[in-house]
Length: 265
Image (cartoon, rainbow, N blue to C red):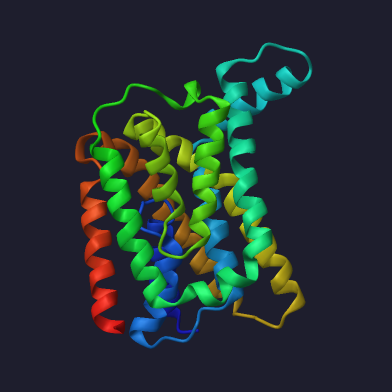
C-alpha cells in the first residue's frame, strides 16, 4: 500500500468517522474514484483503533463517571443520570450489533456499490436536514427514555448501509426526539465506542484468519493520523455545532451524492 494513500485514507477516516457524512462511504469511494488498490482489512482495523482511542480520550472524564455510577447502581446504589446514560449506551448498541451479525455478508457484498452509497448519502442527508430544521430542542442526553434509546439504537443499525453515516443517522434520530444538537452529537459519539470496538474486534478476527499483512510503519502511521484527525474532529464539531447547525453537512452530502450519480450512472 502506498504510504501517501495510507496517510490520506487515515485522515479521511478519522475526520469522517464522527462527522455526519459516512466514513465507510469515503473509505470505499476514495480508492474507487482514484484507482487506488483496496486498503485491506489490516488497515481498516488500524484506523478504527485510532478513532476509538480518540473518542475514549476525549470523553475520559464522562466515561469515568458513567462507569463508576453504573457499577454502584449494579451493587444496589442509586440510578444516577450517569448510570442511566451508561445503560443507554449499552442498550443502544444492541440493535446494531445484532444487525451486523445477521447481515454482515450482505453489507460487505451487494451494499458496497457506488449507487447504493449515492442513494443513502442523498436520502439520509435530506432526512438529517429535515430533522435539524424542525426547531429548537432543550433535552440533553441524560434525559433519554428507554423508548428513545431503542429508536436511536435501531437508527444506528441502518448505518450498516454504506453512505448512511452512523453519526449522521443517530444525530438525526436524536434531533427528531428533541435533543439539542450538542446532546445528539455527544450521545452519538458515546454510542460509537462499543460499536467501533465490536466492529474492530470482528475485523480483527477475520484478519487473524486471513493473510492480509501490511508493514508495521504503515499501520502505525494510519492509527496515529486517524487518532489525531478524529480527536480534532470531535473537539471542534462539539464547539461549532450549535452555531453552524447541520446544513453544511447536508449540502456536502447532496453534492457528494450528485457527483457519484454523475460518475456512475
